[in-house]
Length: 78
Image (cartoon, rainbow, N blue to C red; front, side):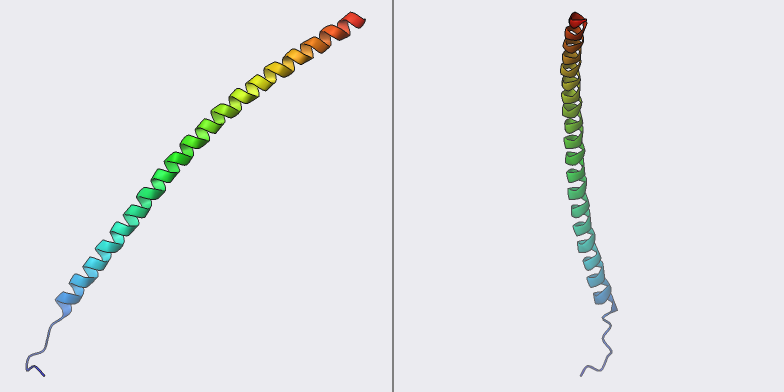
């Protein structure tokens, strides 16, 4: 055995620092991916809302047209 004590504190601290750095990079990558997915979902949701509003507007126009025709037919009968 060596006559002098071995100080491994510095080596341990360097290893801990590397582990923390690696963990931080992993977390940042995952957060970046989540932000990207979130942006895509918001865009998709906005597109769906636009399509739903257009569809509802078109449906409302058609129903209004049918109501007007029915009202005209009912008015003729009286």
